Length: 66
Ligand code: SF4
Ligand code: SF4
Image (cartoon, rainbow, N blue to C red; front, side, top):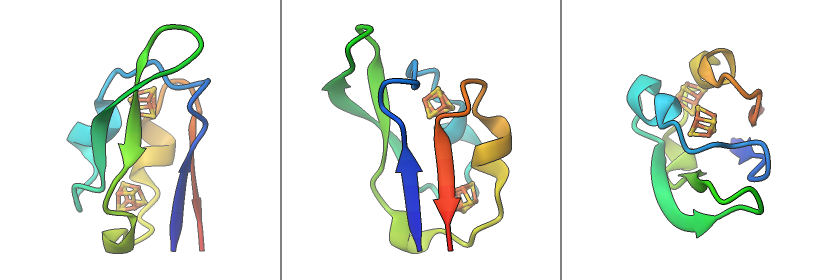
């Protein structure tokens, strides 16, 4: 299981942090080239592949691979 975030699409809105039922995401300390503090999939081993994060991210920055 792997959860990928395109850091340069992310704007750090934290919707994925709120929405993921498995608490996979956190806002990191990393800043992308647009100046946004980006999300990280810090517990991707806990992902159950429900797909909510991909549907929730307004910037289409998340991809969940099986
Ligand atoms: S697919 Fe579901 S469980 Fe996995 S990271 Fe996205 S919201 Fe969380
Ligand atoms: S929902 Fe998308 S844009 Fe918002 S913090 Fe998560 S990955 Fe970044």
